[in-house]
Amino acid sequence: MTDPGGAAAPIRLLLCDDHAVVRAGLRALLASAEGIEVAGEAGSGEEALAMAARVRPDVVLMDLQLGAGMDGVTATRRLTAAREADGGAGPRVLVLTMFDTDADISRAIEAGATGYLLKAGRPEELFAAIREAAAGRAALSPPVAGRVLAQLRSPRPGLSDRERDILRHLARGLGNREIARELFVSEATVKAHLKRLYGTLGVQSRASAVAVAKERRLLP
Image (cartoon, rainbow, N blue to C red; front, side, top):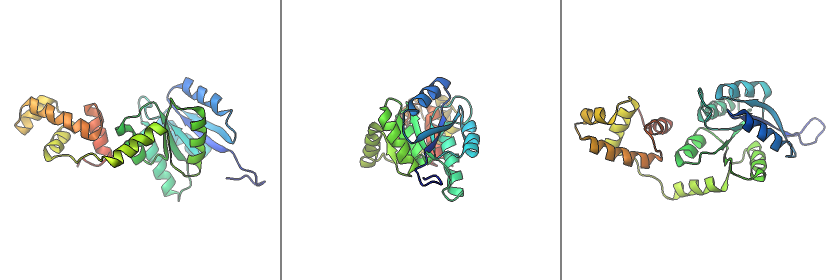
């Protein structure tokens, strides 16, 4: 990126976090980063989409959990789809979050995030990742990179037919007792399948299981 005079133009950054104090802290921190300027802020996924269209950033620094409304994964997917539809003209998304579960990482990357950083990382890692993302290169914090490699080396097995049945009933909002009646099994059997299902998907709750299953197109 260069300006009309031939000098390198600063990387334009859009901050998206639902906590104003976090955005203020990031803005103050980034003021010390050479070649990076904060072009705007957003407190929700919906606001991030609107702001990105208005200020045309190079990179969106995106949190995953954004309170009520559109979450960071959905916003990332929408921004990525818009960039691809526009022939690659649009911002890259760099996730900055405190969540580092396998499910969160997978969902963000599958949604199109160029990078995934943890808020516990060092400022220098953040600055470098922003520059990498602006150049279209992947940027992962060391702990996240380790988890991604571990997943690649030890891929999780697919779901059994029974686990898929239970997953479909979870998506309908049924409880364990109702699922047991539907499948003509005991509640203990349902709980055992749920435990294996959570492990397979890398989640810890019913809602997360359904969300990840939808992301991976495991549900009809």
